[in-house]
Length: 182
Image (tube, rainbow, N blue to C red; front, side, top):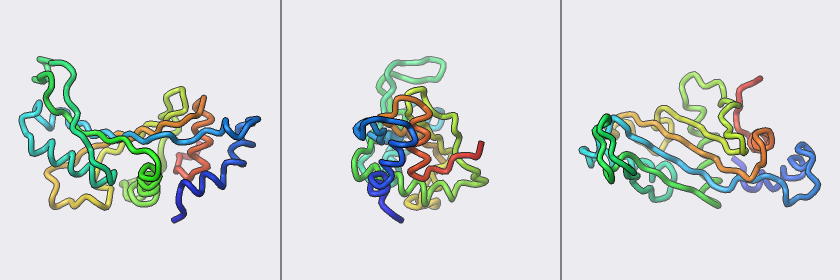
């Protein structure tokens, strides 16, 4: 496996030509990767602190960086949710850890997804950032299925400096993201 950062530096001239940019400083790049694990109904509004601790620990193993628990911003009676109770975990990766995580995602986790046929081309947010949902965190090799209490989902947001969805798509395709065929 080649380092994604080295691959990006080698592909920068190709990206420059594909997007028709005039200056090499305009080439889009990946800024950060945010990983969120929301527990929703599973956490029973923060009553099960062991589940929150377990999700923080597992997300820390996946990201290779300490995750922090997320708190509810306001109370919601319909969901039996109180303000300030823990409802999930998150971590933001930048620099080398970001590239290491993306390599692990592309080469280890996504191939382990059941019936995987590629990731959607429609998950861009009109500014070149990409959102990817994974339904089961057990696709990551760091997670031991015998030690986890239940299956949890992840939301992975890849933030880029691309100005449009097409530019972001070209960047991620060049880096080897397995998009579905048109």
